[in-house]
Image (cartoon, rainbow, N blue to C red; front, side, top):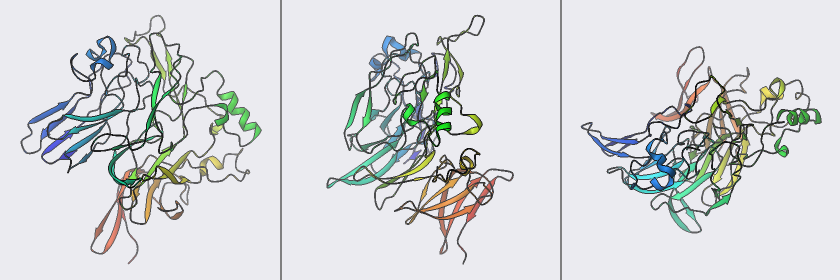
Length: 443
């Protein structure tokens, strides 16, 4: 991120190693003209008297790490502020060696771009155990709430929330409540946070938590398969702690929302969020005799050790991916549409004769592109040959108004530009012949 003459960079750190020690993911800044190092922001405190050190019990700040900005940052040039979406602390799934809330993990932090001084922060997950690091660039938008104009910043999250703040002061636009969450776990030494912050507005844009009522029920036979699949695993609401038996987390470690983020309409103050409805289950267990000993006391057997339905059937009720439009002036959801028909799911032998509505699941991990009339989004499936496609929606209603087959799966997000009097949409695609393609309407 470049603000004035300052270049600000995050970092990538291995967050899969099962150790309690890791490098801290400081954010660093450099002078764009000279290359001179200007400042560091310590995402993990580096001394006992530094702000936030008291949230790392037993001086665990001394060896804990990660807590890095791996995704995209945002900046307000006029205010001279950079907004840092920060990740989870070492380790993603076990915190017995870093008791406490662990600032600034899983926090949005506003810092002065020139000096690196913290202006305000908000932690969205206390003592994270779910890999719910902040995955996307915060969206800057100007909104009017109850007649009051607000320069706002909205952070979409893996857990399916939008946290919204005055981007000058850090005050929440709508109340954020600390609510009690489950804390029981069989992981030795673990002490989950008894509360987590829940925004009162907007409502979640994705399913949260798991229960038998959430299991797919297209037919009694499929319902029974789902019940059988989750036997032996732990179900529970959002923020249910990890267990050696395997806690089914929903949204998954990939989110809800992910690195593709959301789009903002500057004319209306609407936010458009693509998201995915899926789960993760982390296989945790102590090392067996003779295995390499983890300094954390636990090994992760798998990132996908959870329930599996036979023959690729879905486990949960649809939609399996969606686009949600939210009026950020009121916090109300305006519309939601499944992302695609779910063609690959619908053609399953047990489903193809059921006349199911659109199920989603055709893709949500590419960024949305917003124009004055359209919302454009790339899909991994649903084209005329079942392959990837580019879809245009009416941004006011969510109705699909156009679709174009793509030669390969889209990477990143589309962009748009004008050349002469013609508008183009360009995007990168993978596949057999990866490259950059540009599209426009006929003359």
